[in-house]
Image (cartoon, rainbow, N blue to C red; front, top):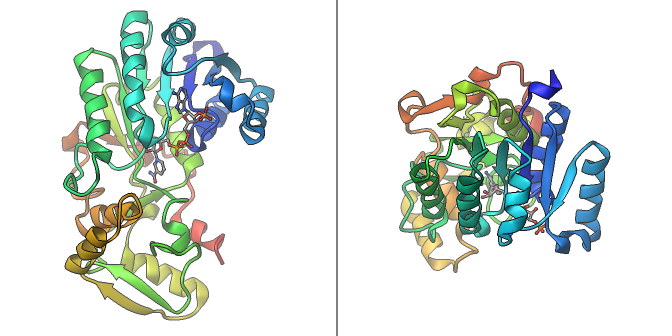
Length: 309
Ligand SMILES: NC(=O)c1ccc[n+]([C@@H]2O[C@H](COP(=O)([O-])OP(=O)(O)OC[C@H]3O[C@@H](n4cnc5c(N)ncnc54)[C@H](OP(=O)(O)O)[C@@H]3O)[C@@H](O)[C@H]2O)c1
């Protein structure tokens, strides 16, 4: 079976999501390759990640998104490319896209997205081009006719959930909790290893070709009020709920310098505007991951909150 599976190149294996993607790819028995910069190998933590992955079967190509020859050499040996560079490096994918076009052998490209759908968010006046940069990469991929899958996993559980969506806190509150807006707008959290498992499942699946995979698992799509309800049950105590109106949140966003205000911008986008859930997946050229791959036993928010007790 393994030889019929696509060979996958992952860019960013020393990063947070890229490491998970590489682990998921290897455990799904894909031949897996990582493009690694020389500089990463002199960082002990990153080197350790590369060693763990190499021991599990990863083949390392040395190179970078700025080095076209390294890209072409790597692309010629694989079928699929998944890019997991950080949001700051999204524009660095432009050379990769032209190299994919030149190589002509790539059956599918996954640009670095892994968040809310950049074409659906409605905070462009606040987000310092965070989403428009990702949309620009989508348009380039489509203009070049490169086969793609976009992964919209919404929030990682490691982002904001450890504080129960309380900007500035590191642990969930036990006395009072801020709720943004009316607290009834739903957002989505998915654990990074589950994002990786869903992503790798799409690689050879024709149902996801030239589509967006949205992750909105039922156990992980919750409003702030529902989130606090679950936490209160777990700690056996009611919290004082302090409601922060849309106007108050916008005022705080404007008063706080960039980039420190970006957590609040994401909270505004998701839990006030409803940017992760306001639209219908099926009419957005999309498919929903937990419906497509019911065998993936993802971590629910309730299970994740148990780890914070
Ligand atoms: N949904 C959410 O809640 C959430 C939260 C955070 C991030 N994200 C998204 O997840 C995606 C991945 O972000 P991340 O936080 O996992 O990234 P990260 O940890 O910062 O890792 C970035 C990776 O890209 C590599 N890289 C950077 N520039 C490169 C270049 N020029 N050539 C080759 N490799 C390069 C880095 O290699 P080095 O080790 O050499 O630097 C590193 O391995 C982004 O699209 C981001 O927006 C989503």
